[in-house]
Structures are given as structure tokens and as C-alpha cells.
Image (cartoon, rainbow, N blue to C red; front, side, top):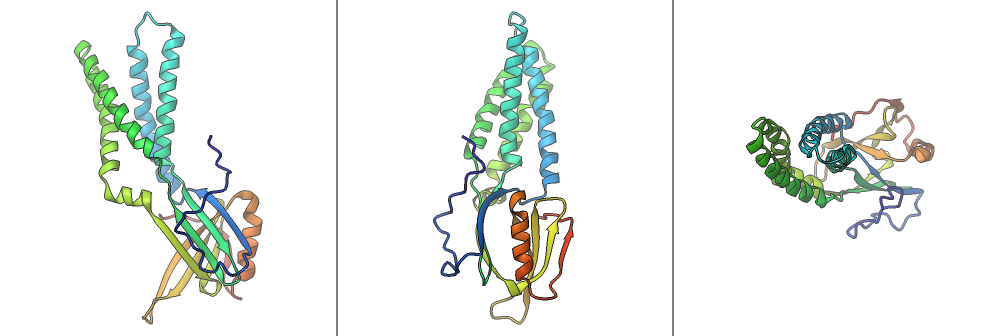
Length: 248
């Protein structure tokens, strides 16, 4: 069901600029093209909220039920919610790369699991109803309602109503860089990727656009990709190893 090693289907709007040239190397990959430290912190914070909600569920299960039932329901809730949250905090962008004699061509797009927001909305509603009922029995459950369903509701609203967030989920980019436009290449020592710095002439201007592009690949392809890039850089272009901070 979740075969992440399966090659990606290329988006229909993708047309390689240099499709007439033989490819030196081509591959597709799903990768996290953002600061993973921030994403991990978000997941850790939400995990604490899920733990509180899980304990509340465990505590309110009737004492007539077996211990196995209580643990099964609580554990199932925790695993399901953790998986749902991870789909939102640890999304992966789809990448397609194609190297030719002319340069590096790449496309990036995202397939957002829309079911995650729908599930979060309905689950938050159900949890709110349950906690409202529980507060009629014990007012202390009001704290759990504010921390659990309340926090999940705010998270859902921020994601569902944020134009920036929605644009991020539907972005599609197609780029090309000539080998001569690459000014520096860094093989990351902290992640399986490369960082290519480039300088591209602005159309109709004397100025140059300076930027960086990340090249993601699997560990087994690292030697092939890095060596191919190294062989096609202009003489004197820096090729170094070091830590790469993904700033997206």
C-alpha cells in the first residue's frame, strides 16, 4: 500500500526542456526539502498533546471494561493520531531530475494527503463532544478539552485557512541550470543531498540572479550523482564537503 520506493509518476504538465538530448542520469525521489529540525520540534509538541488526549481516553474508559480493551483503544488512538500528524509535519516533496550535456533539469511538485485535514476536522469535533460530556461529570476534564481538542482545532483552522499553507501544498516548479551557471557544489555531510549554488543572468538586465538548489538522491545513488556533477563542473568551480542547512 505504501510503496515509497516505487518510481513517481511525472506530472502531466512536465515537458523536459532538453528532451532531445540523451540523458546522462535521471531519477525521481520523495524528499523533505525543508528544515527538518523545525518539523521535528512541531511533531514533538503535537505528540505531547496527543499523549494527554490518549491518557484522557484511557482514564474515561469504564472500569467494567478489561484492561486489554482500555490499552487497545488508547494505543490505537495514539498510533492513528501520530500517523496523521506526521503526514502533515513531515511531508515530502516529489522531485524529478534529468541530467544532460547541457545541464541540470529538475521538477518539484507536491501531493498533499487531503484526507489528513478532513480526518483532523472530524476527529476534533468528536473529541470536543466527548470532553464536553465529561465536563458535566467532572469539571477537571475542561482542562483536557482546552489542551486536546482545543489545540487540534486551532491547528486545523490555521492549516485550512492559511493561503500560504495552501499554496505550499499545490506548488509546482520546473527549472534548468546550465553546467556553466553552477558556481559551487557542496556534498552534504548531514543529509543525503547536494547543494548547488548558481549565478544566472536576468533576462533583459545586466544583473545576475544568485541562488542555491538542492539535489536529493538515495544513498545508493550518491556516488553516481556526485561524481557526474563533479565531472561536469567548469574547471576551478569549488566542489566541497560540508554541512548543508536547508532553508526552505
